[in-house]
Length: 205
Image (cartoon, rainbow, N blue to C red; front, side):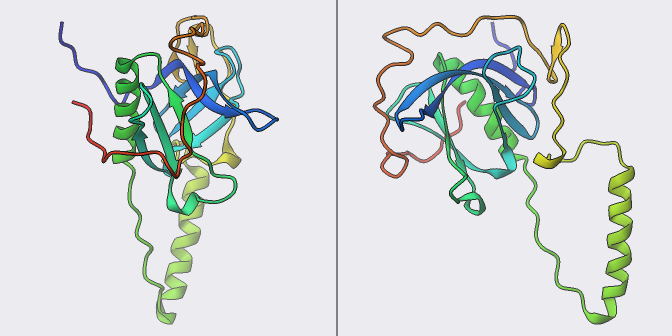
């Protein structure tokens, strides 16, 4: 039966994330991921209110499917985020269909990200006018109750738990995935980001 997938809808699922232990070893760890309009979060379990980490999609430069590992994609930081604290997120799904859904949902959000061009520097005669507009804009922001397009880490407040509705996503109770020797938590064979062979992106159809 054919059906249309709403790529704008929030997502929630147990996925695997490539993590690094305190001894420097890499391993695949099950994490509970939630994809919202402008960010992706992951939790250690589905009952935790505080996320382990939040990645704003405005900081993602591109999403890349890995050709040498099935059902896996990587979120690369944008150019302005390339520093010691910015690292790519490598995520593995349990099936191709799940990877396709998450890949297309994230790619859809990235394609809608607005592109801002810096305004020209105001002339001396216009500085006073621009200053008054700036104060009006700040006042409007303070009085506005709408959600900003790009959330800020400084203004993040954990969303409280509800019985059926959690973190903006209707989440059925489900146990974390059980690793299998042949499919999950297998020995790491992923090359480093700089040596991974990546083909040009072709959207899933």
